[in-house]
Length: 421
Image (cartoon, rainbow, N blue to C red):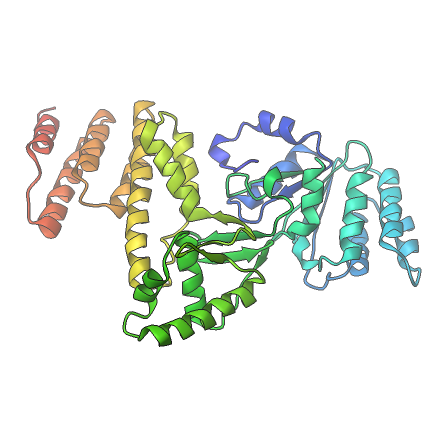
């Protein structure tokens, strides 16, 4: 799988990765999704590009609109497709064959067909059958690339499994389409992405109140928890009997919203039920940071993997005590990631990048004296003595305001050397 960062893309390697696949799926959860689409269009001219509209909910409406768009490239395009659409009871297979026939006769013959906002199409059986046949029978040297706000996994999983579709920008380390989980329902939870939840690629937007939503996040973030811990967190002042009733009602609402049970009770603990393949950005972020801290990578790439996952503070719209504590813990890890990548760039003598990441780190942890020192040294080495002095004065102000202390001897020595330089 490919998580994109435009600054670190080997375009030749990327092109070689995707060239043998008849279709490419751009993950909706990837950053720089528009950059990826633009890159593919630039690399594979001639290309046909069609952005679906909300009116294109069924196959016939979509094909009429698609033919009209392509006629801007080839005015004679679409004869077979339009004839098939004029038939009263036409099958998805017939429509796919007709479109393939038109693509074979197209002038110019496209190397790429790009479809944006494909999620407007309702993934019913005719549409699934149509796209499966289209992708299997595309003209030689023609690729289909699709993008949307969300992915209908049941539509794409068989194609990924069969090697017919390449997934670009799978945000959760490639595990959504991992072979061992292809046949399972998928639950994506983004605690660092504003609290977004997707079931089989579709967003879950209604929770029947904040309590089911917050208990859901608690279970996801605590994969092994006792009933007493749940009660102490959510209903510390309720008698056990009342808390039990509210707990089971709330838990049932979660299951109704998801369509699956997320927990199973065993040996005194609530554990993951195993009914869904879970992709949790917080867990992935923590694992990446643990790996990074264990071997301190010199390359920025390993740090980028963690930074990309941290899109926003943990569940920033929720103010429960357990959420606030987790938010601070994760914010601290994010700060370490910024420091780590800053030092990796400093070691590679890329001062501008190092300074940028150190400044970002100080927004999270302004009292970290060692980062101020690193910045002072970088400014000095870059010939920016005034900035180095300014950084020291900022540190003095922060330490006095927050901790009522002055900079350490180590920092004062660095400052003295800057003044004497």
